[in-house]
Structure formats: structure tokens, C-alpha cells
Length: 424
Image (cartoon, rainbow, N blue to C red):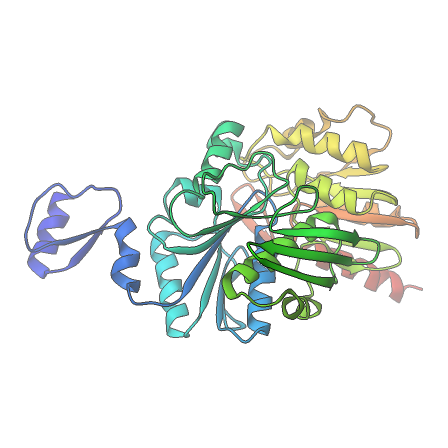
């Protein structure tokens, strides 16, 4: 760093010191700590940043808020797993849930150039722990839920929960799931939404048979606001995502629930999240890659006969694999275990870890080749059954070894039925 410091000194540059590494004192070098960068670049910006964290639901909740705000006439940017968008234009393709520091600030600059009123972003546990969001001035921080994931990185569930909850320290409004038992927030002014427990936004009645229909009530200080909502989404987990989205917009804009609810019909969901790829028989592709995420999907169809295709990522948290197997065995009567992104790990070893959570073997089919596993599941699928293909969602690749090859669950399903219909 010393030689770099000398070079910077000669050329009169500004240096961003993210970890306090600059050792050589020099009056000609202007050192900016990473957590001070936002104040330097955006001191006069009126753009409000909204950060969303949680094990599941970040992408859908962020997309709901983005969609509602656009429909209400605001200029909005969205950054997350699906890429970077500004005012309904996609600027960058998919990447990390939360990008690195320089890319993040580049996106913030673009959003400001686009005159965005709001910048909606997903905040992963990795990004929080690595201080990639340090220094940002959040107008609102939102928690979806805290279950279990990324224990290969965080080492323990307690540490994972601590990191997630640490996001809710500091200034700015906070919105948390009242039904999440592991949520911790010291801010007495925090907002809450819930289905089972009471919060500022509550559900008085709901039905999940064909999409989501609910009656919701907002109560804060002397304000009471009510509305009916309808959404073309499935499952109780998506009801929570909708509540988080509506409450977030309410806090940010003070718009009536009725006006917010009127925009929900325009939201068609997120690709690869409970995406209906075929009907009669019903085939759904979803990104669920933890046992809790799988449970939420299964619960959405608990009164139907379920078949499931899934695997688990290689070189990642191994502790969740048997839990995923146990979850599948509890809900599904046909289980097809296959590869996800095995990376450099043995695909069979990953499958064996999943099988350790399954006590009954008569309903289980093991097929390492994901395409063949999907084909077999479709071959054996009855008209009154639902096939859930889980783990990859809208990913259009598979990582085997160190190679990244094109693969899309949805394409496999569509090609299967296209050929099947052509042969009739």
C-alpha cells in the first residue's frame, strides 16, 4: 500500500480506503473510508434507498415494491438477483444478490442520473457481513424472514441470525415480519407486518385457493386504513411478500391502501419464483433451495398430490441437504433427486447427503442428470398431480466442475411438451 500511496500522492488522486490499510501519512492524499463514500457522492441526493434482507422472499418483495412504485408514478431503480433495472429498463443482467462496493456505487450513480426517487435493493447476509452496504443511508430496511442458509460461510445458525439482525441497527425506518421468531430489532419505532401476530399491517381474512385474496388493515398512531387485495401469486409465503411490499410502500409514500392494492393486479410475479411452466398437468419451477423455502412451496399445494425434482448446490452448506430430503419426503409422494449446481463436489456425494434425510425409499428416484430426471418425472406425472421443479428457478446455467453450461429447467419442460404434442 505504501508504493501505491506514493503514486497516488504524485498524481493527486482521491483514494478510497475500504479497510483502513493506508499507512503512509500524506497531506496530498485525500483518503475516504468506504463507509463515508455515500456522504461524499450523494450528500445532496433526494433518492431514498430501500434495503431488503431475509433468507427467502427478498427478490419477490423487492420486485413487488418496484412494480407498485412504478405504477404509482414514481421513478424507481431495482438491484438484486435478477439484475439492475431503472424505470422499467434492464441495465445489467443477473449477478450477485448484492454487488461489490464499486459496482453498487456505479448503480447508485446511474439511478441518480435517471432521476430515480427510490433505489430498491436486496441485501444478502454476505454483503452485510462484508460491509458492502456500510455507509449507505437507508430510508427503509425490510426483513422477510430468517431461517437457515449459507452456513458454509457463517459457520453457525446463531452467527447467521446475528448478521441478518445487525442490518437493523442504525438510522432509518425498519419494517419486520412480526411472525418471525428470530427477528431482533431494538428500535421501538420499527414497523411490523404479520398474518398470525398483530403488527402495523395485518390480515383480517385471506384465501389462497386461486391466487391470493385478502382483507388487510393498516394501523399506525391515529391512522386506520383498510382494503381488499387480489394478486396472481400462489402460497402463504407470497402473502407475506405482498404484505412486506404494501407496508413498505405505505411507509415510504403514505399512499392509501386502496390505491396501492389497485396496482397489484399488474404484478405477474418473478420469473423462476412459483412460475407456472405448464398446466394440465401443472408444472411449476421455483428457486427454493433451502428446506424452509421448499416447505413454503409444498404448503401452497398441500391438498394435492405432489411430485418434486430437486438437488442441492455443491461446495455450499452441507447441513441443509438432509433437511431438504426430509422436507420432500414429508410432503411429496414422488421424489426425484438430481444435480443442482454440483460445482467441484461429487454429484453422488451431494445426493447421498440428501438421502440421509429420507427414511422411506420406495418413492425416491435418483438420477444425476438433471434433464433426464425432469424427463422421467414428466413421463410419470399424472394429470391430477403437481410437479415442482425446485432449486434453480430462472437460472439459465448449470455449474458442473468448473464449467458453466447452458441449462434452464423451464426450457426442458417446454421442449418436452412441445415434442410430446408433436408426436400425437
